[in-house]
Length: 210
Image: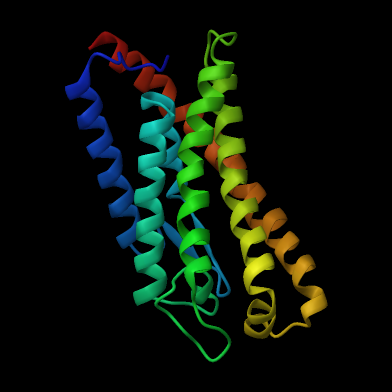
């Protein structure tokens, strides 16, 4: 069970709409939701996905992850960077062209952020009365799920084009992908855990009172 009464459909729909709106706002405000690093964007948009999944459950979390994925698709189509072709089938550059795999990389890992966060939280909270550990672990695992799956997809389906875009040898792609996981993915996961704990605790209390 999640922290919002499953019978409170109106409240759940309002929260779902609110978190969806937050994701959209983060996606359009420069340097807030997507932080450009030249070769890829670091993100904070996964945080409302995680929090929404914790409060509402894995199904709603998956929906919010899908909203995140759609914002990423639009961002990489209309405001591309060096490797946007790995996230948008509608974008091509001299280094590579998008394909159906771009759509899968863009959407599936983001949907799984919410699914993983919701499932892990529901499992751990049974023995974690404070919910602090449940929030932290679910945020870390959900965030890393996104990073690992995205970078694995890039390596498997766009390794050669990614190497060209980054001006490295193909044999160095695995090292470059691993470096992104370590230098971007791990800090993202830590920040997500801290913010999720800080934000969820007062939300639990406020929603319980209402």
